[in-house]
Length: 90
Image (cartoon, rainbow, N blue to C red):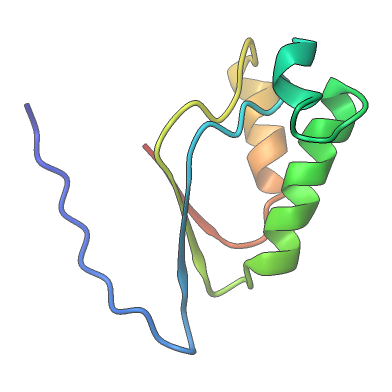
């Protein structure tokens, strides 16, 4: 098993945010409705908008897994290009 090492000092100039299980493009209602959204599209747009409200371009977003479901690589690239901070997808 490989080790992942990430050395980071949080500062006012650059914050580290950690997320997991975003499930962007997840079509099943049981996921997005309890989160307060009206559709899968509303859920995806809402999460991306919230990330962009919180994370500044110089901040780092570390995603620990399950960012999307049933999303081809081209569509994944399109989704993450809408997120306006530095990104690490594990």
